[in-house]
Length: 312
Image (cartoon, rainbow, N blue to C red; front, side):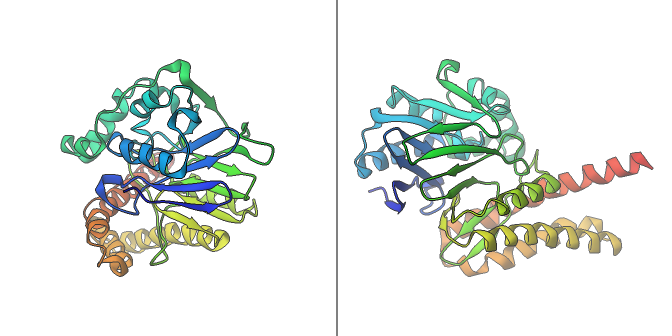
C-alpha cells in the first residue's frame, strides 16, 4: 500500500518508494481545479505514483500537469511512461532541460558514465516524451491551478543548470527539488546534493540566497518531506557547502590533495550516522549518494582551480 498524506492545504505527498526505499522520494499532488504533480520519480516508481493518485481520491486521467523540478532520472525519468496513463497531462520543464525529455539518450549516457550501466536497473526504461505535450518555462513564468493557487517558476541553478524551484501561493511554500539539498526530517539532517557533471557551488549558494529573500513558510523537499524551518534549512544548506570549501582549502594547504575525497566522504558518513538504523536508506546514502556528491564537488573545484591557473 502506498503512503500518502496531506501536508498542506490541497498539497499531498506521495511516497514513491524510490529505489524500493521508503521515505526517500517525494511526489507532490496539488489537488486544485487543475491538478498537478511535482516530480514523479523514475519509471520504477510509476505504479506507486498511480496508486498514490488514486489513494488521494483523484483519477489519473484528471491530472492536468506534471512539473519536473529538473530532468535527472530520479525526478523525471518516469514521465514518458506515466503520461501514457494521464491522457490530458502537459509536462512542464525548464527550457534548458526539456530537450532531454524529448530525446533522453544523452541523459541516460551521462548517468551510465557516472554511475555505471548496472545503475539503470533502478531507474527502468526512460521513455521519450512527445514534444507536443511539453511546456517550456523559465524564470518568472506562472501557471494558475485555481483562484488561490498559482505556481511561479524560479530559475535555480547550482545542483543542475535546468533546476526549477516552484513557489505555490496557497500555502506560500517552495518545492525545492534538489536545489537546497537532501532533508531527512526524522533526524533533522540536511545534506548537500552536489553530483557531477554540472554542480556549481557559487550558483548553488546564489540560488539559496535568492530563496532566503522570498520569506516563504514551508519547503517541500524531493528527498524527503516537508519542513516549516525555511530560513534555518536554507542557512544550513549554505553552511554545508562552505564547510566543504573550508575542508578543501585546509587539505590543499596541507599538501594532501589526494586525501581530499576520503576526508569529505568520512565527513559525510559522520553526518549520516544518526540514520544508521534505517538500513536501506543508510546503505544507499553511504554507498552511492555521498560518493556522487563528493565527486561532483571535487569536479567543480578542480575545474575552478584550472580556470584560475589559466588566468595567471
